[in-house]
Length: 243
Length: 305
Image (cartoon, rainbow over all chains, first blue to last red; front, top):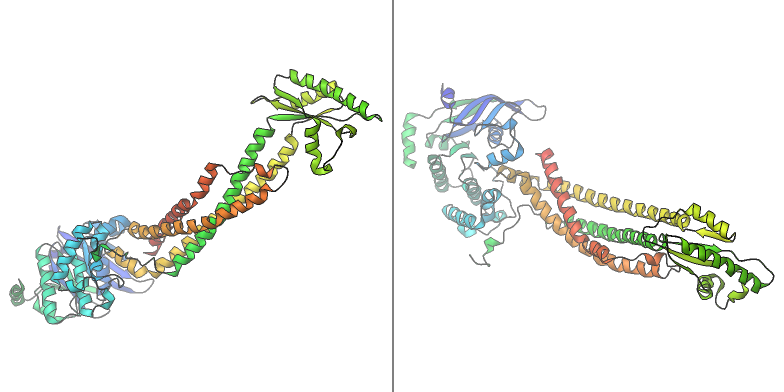
């Protein structure tokens, strides 16, 4: 079973019989058991309301499972204190569907946020952020407040913010949803490059095209359960186009 | 990178400086520091007053010689003075006594002036004679025994060790002090409560940003420090404003107190140390506001997220 192959000692995110419910409502996700190994790349698919965002939010430690065990970086989140959870979160980059940028801050300050939270010195922050903003072609908007930027620009800022700290895990919710195809390819190439450097990537998407164009396994959510779909062989070869 | 680089002007992630909460807290802290400073000045004055009474009154005692009643005023005066001399001679033999002196007519006249006015002829007036005894440092005479001995020497002599009326005054002063201390506690509690609730409300307003900060890996202390920094500044500015109004008020009250006759209230002087304490109130208010905000944020975030 593929799920068994994913359960190995290198698991960076390890879920066992995880369920999640809000208040006293029904379980949105039930008995999720999966182990994502270090350096893996997965798409997360499923219909709207299938629980993609909930699953991602558990992975980036915004919420704890209602039942079951969730280990991230080998630590059981149910038995990890708040400060230690914060340190774990620093190793996770997140791109939100609605960007969740801080509107009154400039593009620069938004991208710099994860580095400042870690206490990095400002000189190093300036160097890194400028480089990355140049790469996502937003260096001209460096000092603009994000509230003045277009949806596509905000998307790129959100991705830049997620990758600036070179995270071990990158979780992205529809990262290419608001950008044109050229930028989408460029952003996907960035995520692939990060993955090659060892970052574990999970991308939640509705885009069949994206899933088909890139030959990576798919985690599919349906009726509260999770199944894993492997890519077709031909598409694995096709993925080399982006190398 | 030059000083003009706009990237140096880092903005705080939480927009805490530009809202009405700041104005509210500043006004609250100003009022609190004003009340605190005036009350503290009162407490310190009462303390200094008690200290002055203790050193000037408890270190002495007064012996009163009642006037002899006689139709011949001159004779009565002469007999009264004889009693006074006998008592003085005895008092001088006391090992606790450092200095014994009888008040002269002029001094007695000064004491009676507020009641009888000027132009009193002491020689014709049957007034008690007073003997002032200054005790040695740390001397603790047995007042009961002393009173008995004095009565033996002269039936007209009576001892006043000031303790009785001083006790009443001390009780009154202590009552005032307790009242003032309660006011101080109340002021601190109200201000801390205001900071607590405004901080909690503010955390709710900025919940989205705080969530983002948490997801980026910020610890609760990172958020708490931003609130603590802002409230430390508000505490200092509010404290300075409060003090600006409190200092003239203290001087005004001190001026009014100085006009009271009798010298009791005028003993209530503020020392340099007391003034230092009052002037440092903005630092205390800054520290108190900072720590209240810091721990409120930490506690609230633990419950909220």
